[in-house]
Each structure stands twice: as structure tokens, then as C-alpha cells.
Image 1 (spheres, rainbow, N blue to C red):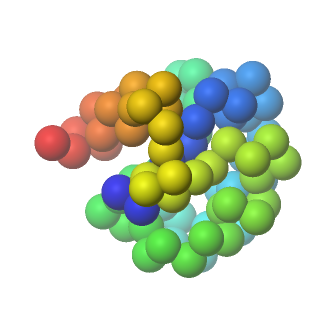
Image 2 (tube, rainbow, N blue to C red; image 1 turned 90 degrees about the vertical axis):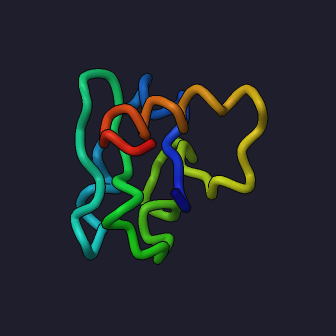
Length: 79
């Protein structure tokens, strides 16, 4: 998974990232948006579109961000 959507999305949930994704890999879940790692082409368009800076590359995550990676994997049935 290249990009992960973090906590700020839960408060904002604006969906700007969905509008700019060229491959439609971002889906709305019950509490936030999630990026499908099997469809994402790592273009980064979602990162610049997010108004609350909630999207990071997996290697930029902190240990506190790990639950958001796990939530995304569970949402898409990965792992």
C-alpha cells in the first residue's frame, strides 16, 4: 500500500481526493475514505487535493498511524 488516509479524514471527510483520483481507487467507508492498494497507481494526486493533509505515503507513517493502515487493509480485504 503506497498511500494511507489518516485521522484528519475522519473529522473532515470532504472527498476531494476521490474527485482527482485517475483510477477511482478511493472509496468511502463508514467513518473515512480508504485507498485501495491494489488499484492505486501511486500518482499522488490525492495527497495534494486533501484539504486536511490526511494522506501520507506508507513509509512516512508513525507508529501511531498503524491502525489506519490496518483499517484500510481490513476494508479492502488485504492481508
